[in-house]
Length: 299
Ligand code: HMG
Ligand code: MG
Image (cartoon, rainbow, N blue to C red; front, side):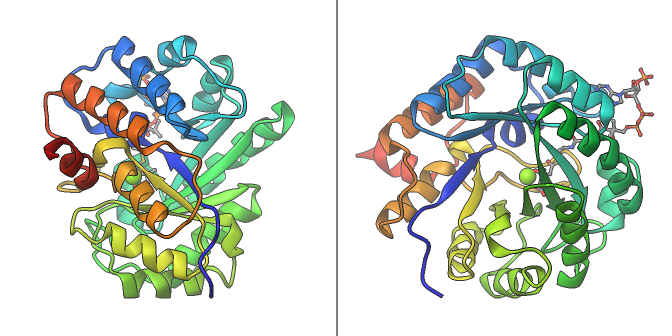
């Protein structure tokens, strides 16, 4: 299979990146991050989550962030919604696209959203109905597609089952998440091969965490499988509150550098992206997780 000529990047830094930060981050700093990402040319930015603040305190200010960001026409500003309440709050914040999230492993589903996989899918049905009524698009996530922190091995057939259900209920795209970053290029190819028997490749996205340093290899493996949408996080921020030891998502800067080298278009300005990463790292008081940004700053 030949490589795609264009790739769409879903920037998850303000959500997946920041949700794991223990120190409070001000609304103003979050807004500045989203605006800098918009300026860098990203077409999709996941801004926050409308989840329980008891579960993920860092996302509690998501409505304020949505109220203050500068929205650029043509850019999608998305948010996570775990239940109808989250969807309604997202709608009240003018969100035009939400993401629902399920897991491929039962144990992770319980720890992350306090219900079984099938209960979570049932919970999404009223969200899908309300979304249709309001003209809101819904993206689906499946977590733990290449391993679970509690159950270990996850069969690709199990991933396919959950992805198929999300797609059938109306998610326009299903993002497959290697939440703990244990996946390898071989396992990634096999997983996409199996899942694409149920959900078309054009409707699948890859979401890689870099815990084992495999994310870039896994993205390349996914490109070879015909996948052309990837989630990534500015400066490699992130982790998951319910997956101990999970390091950041793959850094957006590094993914853009890879794609530039392959002649694959993203519409993103790498220099502006690096700047956005530097700004948020200054706020957090920590070095970037992007190898490209590190190399550039050493020059
Ligand atoms: P629960 O405790 O089972 O549900 O939580 P509940 O309905 O009994 O509600 C408990 C409390 O939360 C109540 O408040 C509700 O009002 C409140 P109380 O009466 O105790 O004061 N509540 C809410 N508050 C605000 N917004 C809401 C909401 N819903 C209920 N929407 C629930 C169930 C799903 C709500 C909870 O488990 C939750 O919020 N989980 C969020 C988990 C999360 O955000 N995880 C991180 C994102 S997933 C991820 O990172 C993976 C991904 O990146 C892909 C990958 O890497 O694999 C996507
Ligand atoms: Mg994630």
